[in-house]
Length: 318
Ligand code: SF4
Image (cartoon, rainbow, N blue to C red; front, side, top):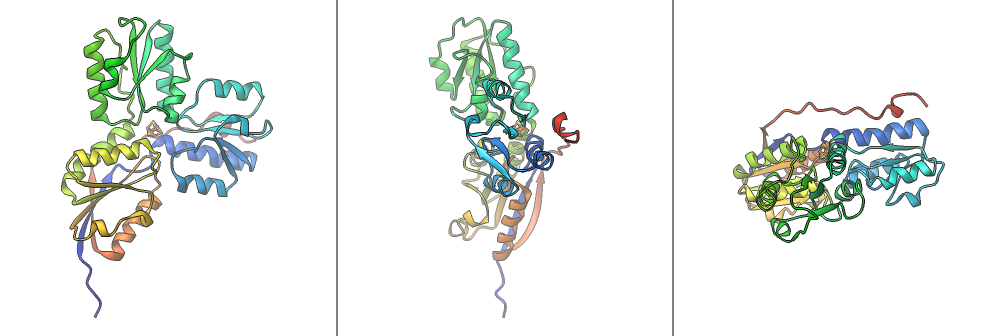
C-alpha cells in the first residue's frame, strides 16, 4: 500500500524572482561571452546568486573583486549593483573594453545624487554599510559628501555641514516600511531635507514585499529563495516575519530546507528574491511534492512588464 502524503497548500508569491535589472545583467554577460569569447571578466558577482554565478563561470566568465585582477586586453563587466565612478574611469585609463551592467534604476539614483551635489546639497544615503550598491552610489561623489544612515537611531547622531542644505537618497532594495521610518526621522530632524521625486526603492523590491505581505499571514511557514548576501531577499524574510509568519527562512535551494522544522505544517508560502532564478523555485516546489500532497495557489499582487535593453555596444555585431 502506498503511504499517503499529508496535504499541503503551497502559496506562491507573484511577483517573485528575477527583476528586469537582474535579467539584463545576466544577458549582458551572456552576450559579451558570445561577442568576445571567453574569458570575459566580471567585477563582483554580477547578481547575488551562486547558482547564476556558477552557470556563467561555466560558460567562461571570470569573477573578480577588483579591476586590478583583470588584464587590460579582456572585456570587463560591472555588476548590476553599480560601481564607484573611479572604476570606469580606471578602466578607461587602461583602455579596456568595459560594459556597465548597473541596473538603470540604480543609475537613476546615481544621477539624482550628482544633481543634488551640483545644487550644493549634501547627501544622506539610507542603505546598508558595505553593500556594493551603497559603495557604488556613495562613490559617485567625492569622499565625505555622502553620509550613510542605516537606522532611525543613526539619524539622531549625524552632523551635516549645513542642516538646511541636505537631500536624501536610498538603496533600491530596502524594506519599504523600515525606510519610511528613517525618512520620517530625517524629515523631523531636518525639515528642509529634499527627497527623491519618486521612491528610490525600486518597483521589483516594492512588489515582492507587497506579495509577501499578502501571503505571509495565510501561511504556517514561509521560505524565501535567495542568497545570504542578497539584500532584497533578506528583506523579504523580515517582511514575512513582521507580516505574521513566525517561521520565515532564507534558503538558497531545496537542499537547504530544514524539513524537521516544517513537520506538521498545513501550508507553506514560497517566494524568491530578485536575483533567484525560477529553476530554483521549481526545484523547491518539487521537493515539497516529494513529501506532501501539494496544492499550489498563486498569491498575485501585481503584474510586471518592465524590461531593460542591454547597452548599445552589445546590440551591434563584433
Ligand atoms: S532589484 Fe531593482 S534596482 Fe536592483 S537590479 Fe532589480 S530592478 Fe534593478
